[in-house]
Length: 634
Image 1 (cartoon, rainbow, N blue to C red):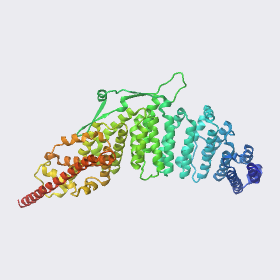
Image 2: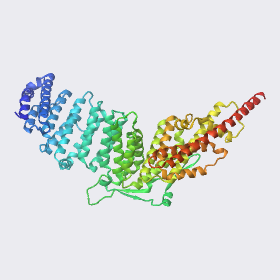
Image 3: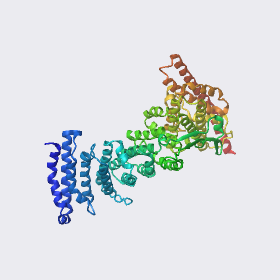
Image 4: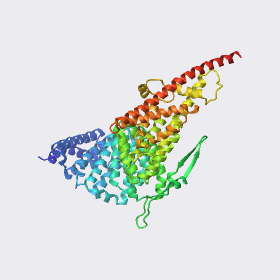
């Protein structure tokens, strides 16, 4: 006996029992809900057991004949015509239809366009109601799950019948509203369900649907609603599987909708020289200094060509300019993922893929989003360093690499400018994000033939300036709280400079100094560790280390430069330390020895300086005590 005969023998009594209830109006009307439920449950369970049995015996070769599937469907047709169907009844009906679709109607060569449209419309109606009237029903997750599984099988059936099958269906413009309603239902279930599995299945089905549509013009109609719903889903902080599937689905939609290749988009760089670049700047001021910002969005002209001979296009230059700002607002929510909480690799991987694919495939159309996407990539790389190499390898060979480097350099300039302000912030997440972005930007520039010497100069100078300023600021605050008298010395005398250095440097052996946190009362250990990570990345620019030699010679040793000199020595020693570690296999023993000697000499100078400073402080303390007593007497 073949598989079909075995299944028929088992399900026939259950079908007959259900027919006896449903096909006589009198019997059907007088049947209690319990009786109908039991009959449906018996058929559902028997069919599941039968197909599982056949599947174990025959594997993927098992196909139920369409005639048998039609036979099983007959008693269900009367139920589907009822004015109202309970959730439990519909749950079993959809489960039965799912198995008929999976093992019969959706197999290769069996599914017809008419059958697809019939069942996709039927199932969408039963889980979503009439268009525009969807109301999510609580405690119905099984019903929604079974409906989603039916839709997924229908989409698989389209794939089984080749790429032209679904394309021919969506060519019928009358079907597009049904398609839009299907997208809406899947999004609503993904947003409203309380079950992670239902959310994930709904998003996965939506992702398959987007790939099947494979038409940016059609998908652009669904883009705003999809992005808005995914932002709501992610903001609700769901299970990590839901987060991962949200990014996968959004990535598919974004790449199909904003594909530079598909749009045939044109970009003209209006800035082709340094002088022209300087002529296209905007200036912003704060109380103390001026920051120059390069407006890269104004430096490029982006157009989507319009062919007058083709059909009317939805995706035009005007559409792009109005859609991207809204997308950016949503991305500020979507990309704000706490990767400490969501530590599973699936979340990191899906975020990484979304970010990289957007840059690689939609760089021109989404150029204004690149800084935001780079920040997201930086958080992924910080949470898992293996993604750093993958990011560099993925981005350094794109055709728009020159413009990408301009964006990165501008972003790096902005981050360097903000460093001092961010380091003073009580919000540690801002500090972490700043360093994440700086480190990844330097890594990408390193991978693209190295970082420019001037950028490296500015970065090192700003780090030194920021640390020195904060040491002075925090020590001045400490002094106000601790000193019982007002000092008659000017705020920037050598005594004050000495106090700043000694209050935040620890006098230990060379090895201990190398391993300990030196600025524990200025920064948190996490912040100082971030500095160490940054120095390690900077140290990869060994060819640019001539910059540091110049810095050594230009630093003045006057009374106002003690803090700056000490901070500079700390920065230099760390960079040299990491450079020597990274080059152990290629630098000869003499070079290593010279590097170590330089490090030791710098540390010895620091220690000697601190010893001298302490003696001066002792005299200063004696003077301060005497001065305070003198003031008290008079």
